[in-house]
Structure formats: C-alpha cells, structure tokens
Amino acid sequence: MASSRVRKALIPAAGRGTRFLPLTKSVPKELVPIVSTPALEFVVTEASESGISDILVVLSQGKGAIADYFAPNHELEAALEAKGDTQGLASIRRLSSLAAIHQVEQLEPRGLGDAVAHGEQFAAGEPFAVLLPDDLIDERDELLGRMLEVQAEYGGIVLALLDVPRSEISKYGSIAPVDGADPDAEVVAVADLVEKPAAKDAPSTLAIIGRYILPPEIFSALRQTKPGAGGEIQLTDAMRRLARSGTPVHGVVFRGRRYDTGDRLEYVKAVVQLAVRHPVIGTDFAAWLREYVSGLE
Ligand code: UTP
Image (cartoon, rainbow, N blue to C red; front, side):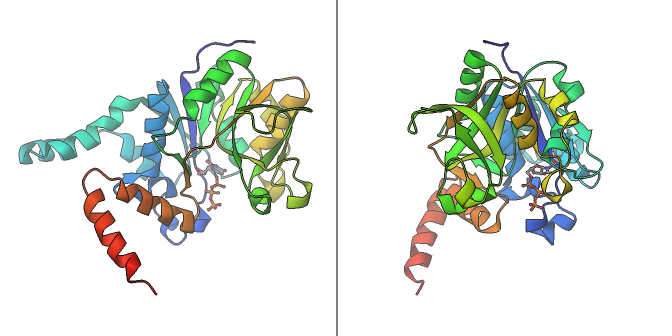
C-alpha cells in the first residue's frame, strides 16, 4: 500500500519537562541550548532536510518563548544589520526559511497521545511525521528520510527503533517483531507494541525512539484510547489499536548516533559531543577538553 508523499510534521513541545526543573519552571526544555542552538531547532532542521514543508509545534500555555523563537524579530534584525553582524543575522533568518511553522496549544499535558491528537486539523487527512525534540539524531546519520521511504513503500505506521540493553527497555515503548523476522534486518515488520514493559516481559530489546510516521487514522484511534500509565494518553496504545485492526506497522532500526537531551546526563554528553564538532569553537574546545580530562583523577 504505497501512499502520498509526507510533507507535514508535528513536534510536541507541551510537556512539563520535570527532569529539568528548576529551569523548566520558566524556560521550555525544548529551548535548552546545545552550545547556542536550541534542541528544537535541530529537530526542525532535520525535518526540513527530509523534505517536510509544514510543521505544527504543540505548545503549552507557559511556552510563549517557543512561539517568540520562531516569530521574526525585525528590531533585532535591524540592529544586527546596522552592526554588520551577518552571521548573527543569518542565524536568526534561517529559522523562517526551514519550513512554515504553525502552533497549537495543549491546555494540559495529558500525554504524548493527547499532544498528537491536537494535530488533526493540521494533518487534514494526510499522513504526517512526529518528531520528539528530546531525541537528536546526528546530522551525519539518516533516519527520518529512510522512514519516509519505508512509509512510501508500505503505508501505515513507521517507527524508529533502537536496539538497547534489556536493562534499559523499561524506559521506552517496545515492539514484538512478526514471527520469523530477521533480528538483524534494517526494516522490521511489527506485530505488536507495548509501552514501558518490565525487562523480563519485553517482547524484544528494540525500543521505540522519538520519530514516527503516522496515518490520519491515528486520530480516531486516539479518541478511543483511555488514559493509561500516569493518567496520560499514550501514543503507543493508539498505535497498537491500529496495528491490531490491520494497519501495517514497520520499524526502521537506527544504528547511528542519537542524543537524548531530555535526560540531564545524556544532555551534558550531547553538548560535549556537539561542541567538539562546532564550526567556531570546536577546535579550541577539543584542545581544552583533552587537557581537562587528562587532569581528572
Ligand atoms: P516527555 O515525557 O519526554 O517530556 O515527552 P516531559 O513530560 O516534558 O518531560 P519530563 O519527563 O517531565 O522531564 C516527550 C515530548 O512530548 C512532549 C514533551 O514536551 C516532549 O517534547 N509532550 C509530552 C507534550 O507535548 N505533551 C504532553 O502532554 C506530554
């Protein structure tokens, strides 16, 4: 079942970000910087580079800073222009060249499924991508583009999967591959999905990470999905409902570099890794880092 080209993406950014308190009391975690670029901008760039032209950001009431981040700031542009700061100017103008950014408000953080449900009007009957801004995919490695190819071939749902140690699977959703699936294949046909399984019950060590391609049927499945763990509407439960009613589900097993910026330790590691490769400060930072590490006990 081939389907039309996906050109829309939804980015949920309305969560409480409690792992980053106290900062997230007033600063959205999606704007937490990787050197000087917010995590959210990396994800918007990734979508744009995979051919997405329209992005819906799901915001909560307290996250006006995200809306401001994407809105043009003519006064700042004029000031940078007057100063001849072409780099600064390009860095703020590129945002509006990446994609058309739309916004919708989620009044209460009732879970990822509920955030996605806010995209029904935006999707307007088309399949769409979902990108979680906590998950950064290294620009040298391709994931979303490959998922879009798989969606064009099979239709239905396409998941991004990461093979994790069994001890970590309970932090994620997991999948059961169809019987007889090759465990080393790059594209896996999925029989079932389960949210945060106990390590001993997990049907595989393939974890669902923050990229999805969803068909528009997800909205009716979400409406039928009751709140699950923590009173939240789980996207995994709605996808499972579709899988059980015959929607094809495939997973692309990602073997590249991924950074989880929603977790403090992983966030700091991401900043260090990306700072080392930064076009302006990378060389100096790497030299300092070598010296610093050699001096650690
Ligand atoms: P997370 O569960 O990782 O984010 O959701 P969180 O709840 O904000 O973070 P913690 O666990 O309290 O630290 C993944 C993504 O889904 C969004 C979040 O903003 C994040 O980008 N999200 C989550 C919503 O948009 N709405 C929700 O109701 C829940």
